[in-house]
Structures are given as structure tokens and as C-alpha cells.
Length: 175
Ligand SMILES: [Zn+2]
Image (cartoon, rainbow, N blue to C red):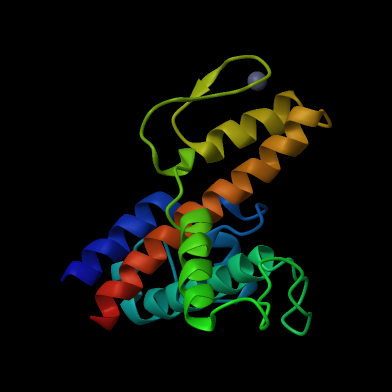
């Protein structure tokens, strides 16, 4: 029951068919993974929706982990937050590192999850949804620095918000 509710909340916040071209969104993941059974109504095919969310959650966790350790692929050696055997306690390292990772990516005050209006930095127009603001920036300020950094910020914020929600859901499912 709780899992179904969370599932609906995730759909409400993250699932938008206008976000097909946007990297990292749940809808682009649906298309990438060819999850045709998934629609705007997750309850219509709850198994397909659950499977997509599960894969999407895994992908977000891997992406956050790679970013955190400064790696491009899972075969790379970590370049950041590395473990030094000589002067670090493994238990303390794992504990601290996981805390920092979760704080950086999962507990994130991204505008995607707020209900307040968000502003276009260039012209000051206000929007309720990040997706709409991005559409505005793409159409009105294309090619500008604002356009590029807004896209980057939006992807980061969306992904962090998505990861937080997906981890909450996974926690319920596992419990
Ligand atoms: Zn604007």
C-alpha cells in the first residue's frame, strides 16, 4: 500500500512525456529501455512500472557513485574520495564516505521537488515545474550560457530528486 502510494508520487513528480529528449528523466529511461508497457498510468501495468523504476533506481545509484568517485566507467579506478590503507580505518572510511555520498546526491534540495515557483535566471519569468522552465530556456535563450548551465543544473537536480524518491520507494519495498 505504501509502496503503491510512493510509486504514484514518483510518477507525479518524475513522469512527463514531454521530457523524452531530456537526458536522465524517467521517461527517457522508459524509451531507452524500451519499456512499452509503461504509460502515464502506472497502475495499468504495475509490473512494468515497477520493473522500470527498479532499473531506473539502479542506474541512478550507479551514476551517482561514478560521479562521486570521479570515474567514467565502472572499470575505472576511483580518482576522488579514495581509500588510503595506510592511514584510514576501513570502517570509518566506509561509514563517512557513504554518508557524504547520500548527502550529496540523495538528500538534495533540488527545485524539482519544491512546489514554489522557480525563476529563469536570464529574464526572471517564473515557473512551477523544472521541465517547463527548461522548455522556456531552450526556446527563448537557446545557445546562451544560461541555456547550457540551466540544462546541466536541471539534469543534476532532477536526478538527485529522482534518486531520493526512488530510494524511499526501495526502502519500503525492502522493508
Ligand atoms: Zn527566460
